[in-house]
Image 1 (cartoon, rainbow, N blue to C red):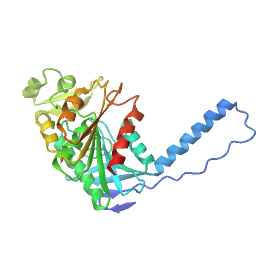
Image 2 (cartoon, rainbow, N blue to C red):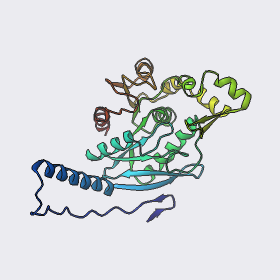
Image 3 (cartoon, rainbow, N blue to C red):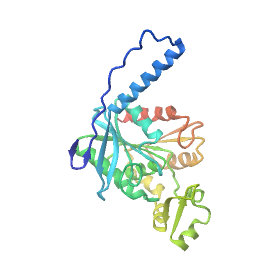
Image 4 (tube, rainbow, N blue to C red):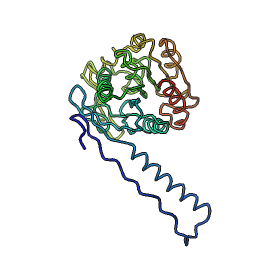
Length: 302
């Protein structure tokens, strides 16, 4: 149902009551426990879906940003931002949203343009534009009297939330999960050592999949936007009253933990640092270890 010109909410799912097992079934005790646990998991998943509402918000370019609100009716809300070529459905983002939900804290996870379900074309770099997309989300919730207590971003999303805090001083807490401090790094690993010459020669580089299909295009303009995005200067512009938590995995092979330890932790004044031992860039085996400090930090900021 349409609740205003910019927002579309999908109806909640209805969940029926669990039916008891039939007495004449002769399962073993172990098999019974497995089936009961499975059915309880299904019910829990359905209950999670019942609290989730799909919402569409227009950005300044009139593109539809599609997101999911985890509604607990808390007055404050946390906005979650995904990383490079990811989406609101990433395991990390969904798990954080549901962990917040279990603590009674509402959250909103959304797709940046050209990712997931949102409109628009995917663009490499695009940091300043994604800051404005986040701004559209924060302003929407402000207009409906919901205070954004924190913005949380993973990987590139971590850069976006810090850049947001450096430009707009209306958020009291930022969580940077595995963001990159020096944006001049990490390019050769994706594009090759001669990427600069190729861009000057052809004006673009098409990044292809293993099967040869084009995944995305890097233009000279988009590359310059990334190279000119200075996280050091941005961090110096974050309001000293804004509390910032940086979380990084010690085994991150995509972005070195040094970006957190020698970069963000050294330059941001009101800063907390949490290193998750053994965690990779996606916290593949450390989802709970990631959620714990994030939840603790957000609850302290309420």
